[in-house]
Length: 413
Ligand SMILES: Cc1cc2nc3c(=O)[nH]c(=O)nc-3n(C[C@H](O)[C@H](O)[C@H](O)COP(=O)(O)OP(=O)(O)OC[C@H]3O[C@@H](n4cnc5c(N)ncnc54)[C@H](O)[C@@H]3O)c2cc1C
Image (cartoon, rainbow, N blue to C red; front, side, top):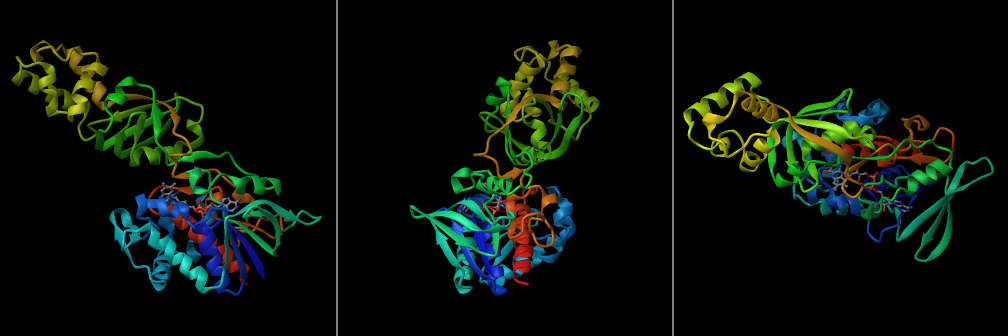
């Protein structure tokens, strides 16, 4: 069996190694001069390459089409991935949230490990090779690729072509969406693509005044005018354009296309551990005790410095007022602003900031046991190219590894 793997990222390299191990003659084509450019920037340069959780928990962290991954996630578990990399010489460590990193904290070591396995298995690797289209026979079945290799147009034939071209995020790493075009041209449905695990732009001017402020243990609630779309506790960060941080990235994974083109309303409960009544009682006590102080000089008891100026402004209460002069209505407005700090989410940030792509090759077009296109013989799709995406925590790379493994095992039988 001769196979061409298009894309030398996480899924492509893994698939090529495993297929070669199973006796397949593999050629790996990568348009960049180096393999694994995206891997290099994963996990802030440390590469959170899997999550040490059982398969059912892994699937629970996959946002789109987790059921498609049933076989793949059982066939190659995160334990298998950790053990395999260990056998290949990469020791790992498990951190908070069972995130697995190389013990060296270097994403480059993950790439080097894969590259040395490619060599060991005699995979023919051609870098600087941009695939420009699929070669098909009269029935539309895939028989090879057209590529541009070092300024020359070439045609390569194979019994199997594996598209491992990744998604659309961080296009500078090479993921420009070619695979979607190839798949669509071959007649496969591609679902709507949108950036995921991405920050939000917000309309309010005061959000910019909060730039750099990081909040832990807050609750973020997002509605689309009619329906509540997201509600979770966690950590978020104010930026010069809006909000970011783990809570916001999770929200983007759930909202996806809902956020595209629509303005969403967000509120942050800055004090989820206390009720509105309890907070009001605390304000009353504080204002009674410091009746002669200006309001702004007491608010540091309740909020981090950057918020002390913003909260009265949003609540429309004069911060220079003496505490004794704060009316009940004003106090209740402070309570409401604290329990439901308002935000208008105007859009998602773009592909340059998205960790993954939501949407992709429709999984109904693909056999989940082989990753083969059901209606195009010779064509396989793996990794982020598929309509699969997960939360942060090593789950997206686990998608890449396990879909690659299923495909390689099918090619090798
Ligand atoms: C900043 C950032 C941090 C991340 N951190 C993590 C993390 O810590 N943990 C985690 O689980 N996930 C993380 N991810 C997500 C993870 O990197 C991806 O899900 C994963 O790399 C997808 O693997 P892939 O093989 O499908 O695609 P990629 O790794 O993107 O590989 C695709 C390859 O195909 C090549 N290619 C594309 N078109 C062509 C063509 N026409 N011809 C030849 N080659 C082509 C590209 O150049 C690229 O090398 C992160 C993503 C980003 C952007």
